[in-house]
Length: 488
Image 1 (tube, rainbow, N blue to C red):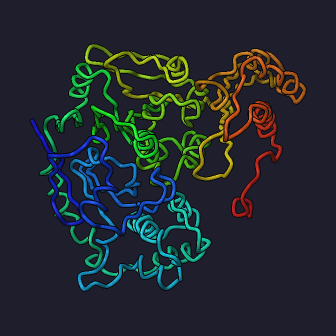
Image 2 (image 1 turned 180 degrees about the vertical axis):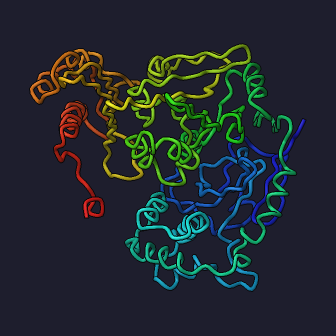
Image 3 (image 1 turned 180 degrees about the horizontal axis):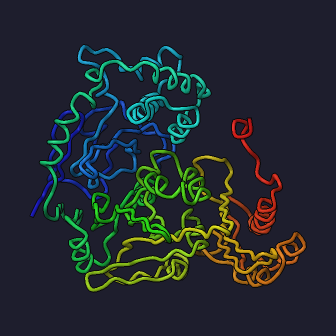
């Protein structure tokens, strides 16, 4: 039995045998290591001031991703390389090109958010040799600044892509082979268990071990990306024990494509799901790009978003509209069901004791079908959904509706289909008159609530208008506002 979490912090090997299940990386860095370049701003993964890079071996290769240290639990770091802003300087103390570009372009004013921007831009610098404006903006979605207006920071990102000194200058490029060897040596062959009084954390060594753990600990909290569970701790001050970490399990990170669709493992992050889906289902790819910021997409998982069961989770409505199938696993069996059947009531899903989400199969839309997903928020990027509607339409040669699947989030206690609206449309001609006649059916399917994100009246009207928008887009009307660079 292993009894410590082992990882590399900048250049130092770390082994922790006395560790709480909900201790965050941010608190560890600031309180125990005095690495205060990593800042606490929001403590909920929104502002990016706590951004660090975490490297992990995947398919034998070392890949680094930007993450939010404020909601990243220490138990998820086994066999990883954590990189903070203090690690970027050259051997002689010279600034890294990313840091120097921010100085040259006046990208920092008060300076509080600057280390987070540095780490996000550094992650981009490592993976994209000459990023375009859209790629830069995407990399910075999860970083907030009140001072600079972002333009100097974007200019710094553009400047640094043109200035790439010898690889020996960069600490991660210079030591890559050494880090790979050290991480291989840290790989755990068995399950890690750490207990301190009543607090316990468990890191299963395999999916089979996970099933065994959950058969013994059916009430355990399963943590993949912690983009939601992290807030239970940082905002609600909840005490969780035991906590089972699964983000390292390669068996849950498989993406398997077939002619009919793609099977996505429960541990696949939004970022990896985007790579797998955006080419075949562009509308779903565009939606994933609006889930949180880059750091959240690197941490959060499709399986976690489903298992959470939130009525405003972004992935269930479009997956339900596409006809996705969920696979659950326990020590005794695998169980499959239509994804829409998994959601029973608010906070209640059809997951039996000892079961966990293993994968979801997403069918590709048929060539003749039309699919769209619309996320309605107060601000476009990095905001929680007020209403999310997804539509999958099939027409015959006479433009008659042969099938339509409509699913919404934010309109009920669970992600939910609109059966009355669907029934009002099937068999009818795909015309504006048909859409207008079907709009009142929403009042039968949904009775939304009022909260601080939207009123019930707003949600109901928005749902009806999204059906109209879907119709207008399918007939070629300019229903969606485009950014300037998308039409220039």
